[in-house]
Amino acid sequence: MTTEHIRSTAPGVPAARPGRPVLPRYRHDAPDTHPPMLFPDYGSTTLRAPRQPLVVLPQRLTEVTGPLLGEGRLGELDHDLTRQHAGEPLGQRIIVHGRVLDGDGRPIPNTLVEIWQPNAAGRYRHAGDNWPAPLDPNFTGAGRTLTDADGHYRFVTVRPGAYPWRNHPNAWRPAHIHFSLFGQAFIQRLVTQMYFPGDPLFFQDPIFNSVRDPLARERLISRYDHAVSEPEWALGFEFDLVLRGREATPFEDGDDD
Image (cartoon, rainbow, N blue to C red; front, top):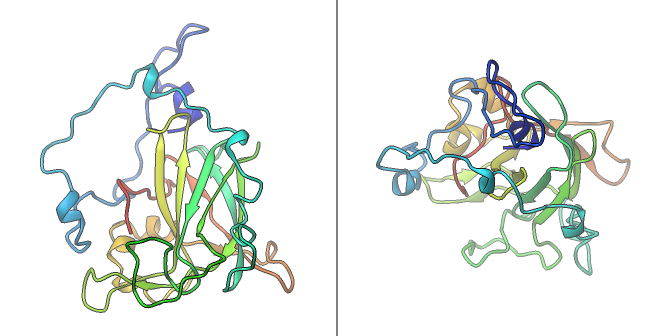
């Protein structure tokens, strides 16, 4: 999914000759790290989960190269969701930061990280979101940045609110921020969600609980970072994303709410 996986081979696989691309061989993640495509408690998976066995397609050169997702495609304020409009958004400012790492703990540099989220009242700026919570004219809820040489990313935003979603009686999504990671091509994309510590809504959320390994679920919860919090300005939260291996961050199989 990243440059690491494009360049490396599995143990025992001969290395390619110089100048020739090496197609990826992925390590296995721990069982129950990622949610299943069909999870009956999450109602919409029954409508979109595959009914037939998946067909594995070979990964050729066109699947593991391009397009380029470099700094030239980033706006000056893409990483700061609180300064993208004429006024300041409502809500508690937060700094979300962390590192993107491979399965061996090595940083993944120059990786495009995108986020999207509802506003402080728990409403997305989207035509399909019409529950009676206020929209914020100064908050769009989308941002992106590139990881630096140490695999580090940083966003400034507002803490999102919970929202209802009608999956089950009195269903509320815990506060969360969606994350998307790109490798070197659009098909090399991973999507996950970041939650906040101590949320009282975890117990009834089937998306969070579709990750069956309790230790893996814990890796979806950010950590309060007092060293990053800025006095009289913003609270800091740390959220690392590990792409592979037994400590992998759980990633989704498709777009979720």
